[in-house]
Length: 184
Image (cartoon, rainbow, N blue to C red; front, side, top):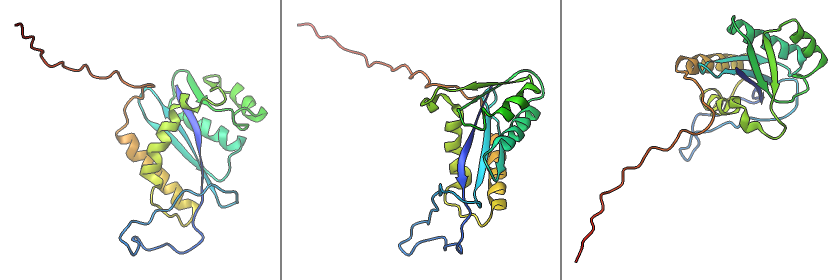
């Protein structure tokens, strides 16, 4: 099973980089800017739940062609067996072109999560970890730097990948203190 999704666009800076520290001694952070424009880069990601490894791809647009290209990467990363892709109901995931492409790739099966239930998608939790590793505090000059940061962070996170389990582990059993009963 693969949980797939896109991270919002990451936009390169259009101004010279700021110095690393502010006058009062705090590290300067660059927030991820969600806006429209031709200079943005979309990061596609697919989490292989059984081993915790991730497949990522950067693209200049979020459309059916790049969605199909990303699905091909997922298929190449897992050469045997059926692949269940759990994803949201974005139009590029369910377009006529993507459905036609999926007919030619019978190993891949699309499973859509219900509307308003993004907590069912384990990929969302991985994006939180990815943002810390690749994007936090960074200021990118161009899309190539975003692609490089994505590639490096994915390799580092895949090096320590573990299987993902949905849900919270059971709380540890608590040792009770011994009670003394005094009889009079």
